[in-house]
Amino acid sequence: MRPKTWAGTSIVGVLFGATFKLLMKVIVMPLLGAPPINRAYHYLAGNTGAMPGMILLTIVVPGFGEETVYRGYMFERRGKLFGASIWAKVFVVLITSVSFASLHYGEQGFQEWSRP
Image (cartoon, rainbow, N blue to C red; front, side, top):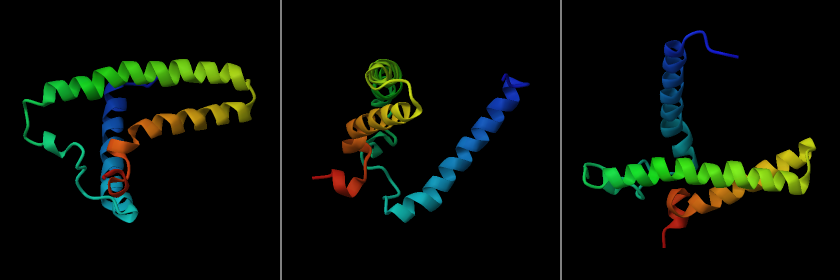
């Protein structure tokens, strides 16, 4: 299915993303007890010298590395290991997602639990 216009699709996507972010910050995050500021990355506020390296580390490297390893290699290997049934696919998605999330837990997880 192709969108009728890329401009319209882009506008809807940006509006959806902004609304989702607002709902997460205002409703969901406070209900989970998350702090309003992510302390792991707060040092970047106003720190223009750190931004080029952070852009590389948060956009370029993960975009290639994580997607290649998790979506490419791990899905494919685990798919062959567990088979092609719907339950095998669900299991592969779950274990790949848990292993992916576990790598990010220390710096992006629940702040109270991940700090020494």
